[in-house]
Image (cartoon, rainbow, N blue to C red; front, side, top):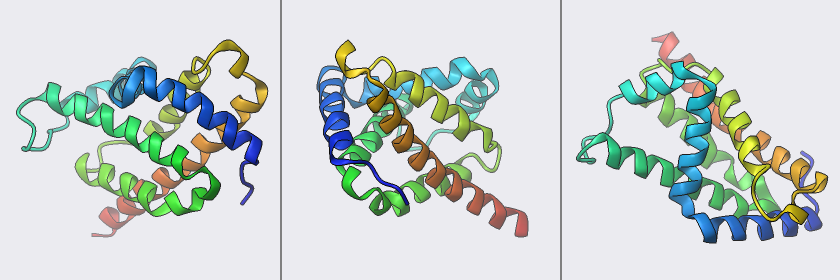
Length: 164
């Protein structure tokens, strides 16, 4: 598997640090999720119809926790840029979890839309001098890797459901 260069890792970490400190994981995740909702009303409706876990008192608290988890997931990925493969199991399990929670109602299309929303967001991250072709390519590589692993987990779990 190709990997990021040390220069790309340094660039992404500088951009990420700036974004993470100024916005925080909840705002980052919320922005990404709203990007998905904007791209697909069907997915937005599915998300808001999906039952939320009982440990949350209401939908709003669940939505905030979910957004924060998305931001924290990205933070973990950025922390492991030198060895993205070490994130494979974690990302695979996210796909499995979403297949189980959604009771097979989420199509694999959601992951492609998530990748698009992530890439759209990264185009706005960092100051203008940091929005270079090198940073865009690095973010695209990172997002492609992460979404592919999540998608594999989701499809694996859905195939198990179909078997039973």
